[in-house]
Length: 350
Image 1 (tube, rainbow, N blue to C red):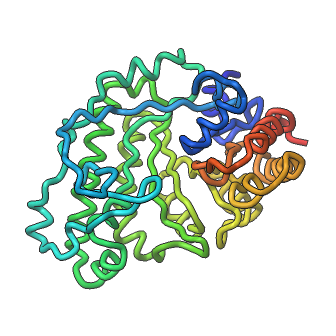
Image 2 (image 1 turned 90 degrees about the vertical axis):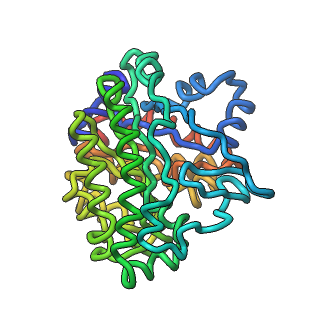
C-alpha cells in the first residue's frame, strides 16, 4: 500500500498494512528538526518521519489592510491580533452590535481566496499521499474573536438570533471558499480538514444541548459539503470534549484529530470501545508530558501502549496528541515515536 491507500483504508475502518502516521508540528519545531537532522527541506523531513498526509491551501489575494500599532496579524474577519504565536485579539468588533449591525458588518469576500493553484499542488505527489484540503473553517474561534468569549455565552441566552447570524455569516464565507476549492480540485483531494476546539482541560467548553443548538447545524453544513464532493471530513478538536462526540458522529464526521488523553473524559480505551468503529481517532500519543518531557525509551514504551489500545480493527492514525508540537520538544522523541509506529504498527498488531 502507498500512503494514500493506507489512510483511505483506515477511514473505512479496515486494517491497512500499517497504522498511518500524522506529522504535525509548529514551524519552530519543524525548523529545529531540519537543522538538527541536517535535512534540507520540508518534504524530505516528512519522508523521514513517515508522514502519510500532505496538505494544500488556497492563497489569500484580497486587499491588504493596515495593522494598528502593536498588532502582528489580521484575520479575514477584521480581527487584529498581537502576542506570542497566533496571539490574542486586540478588540471584539461585534461585542455590542445589534442584529442589523451584524448583517451590515464588513464580512470577507470569498473572491479574496485564490484556488487556481490547488489542483496542481495536490497532484505534485502523484496520488501517493492522502491529500488534505478545504478551508480551515474555525467558525467557533472566529465568533469568539468577534464577540468576546464571555459575551458569546451570554448571547446564547440573551440574543440567540444574533449569535446565529454571526455564525451563519462566518460559515457562509468558509463554505463558499471550500466549495470553490472542491470545484477546482476535489478529484485530487481526499480529506476536507477543518478545525474548531470545543474542549478544555477538564471537559467541553459548552454543553451538549448548547452544541446541538448553536454549533451542530454549521458543522453539519460543512460535513455535508465535503461529502457532496466525495471527500472524508476530519476535524481538529482539542481538549476534553467526549460528551460532544455522539453529535459529531450523528452529523457524519469521519475523523477526529489530535485526541488528548490527558484531558477530562478522554480515556483511550473508553474512546476506542465507544467510538472506534464509528469515527477515525487521530493522535493520542501524549505531547503534553511524554513527548515533551520523556526520553526516547519512555516515548517508545508509551507509543507501543497507545498502538496496543487504538490500532486493532483500524480506524486509528498515530501522531502527537496535539498537532502543534512545540519547539522545545526533543527531536529524538519525535523520531522515537514515528520509528516505533513503523516498527510495531504493522497489522496484525501483536
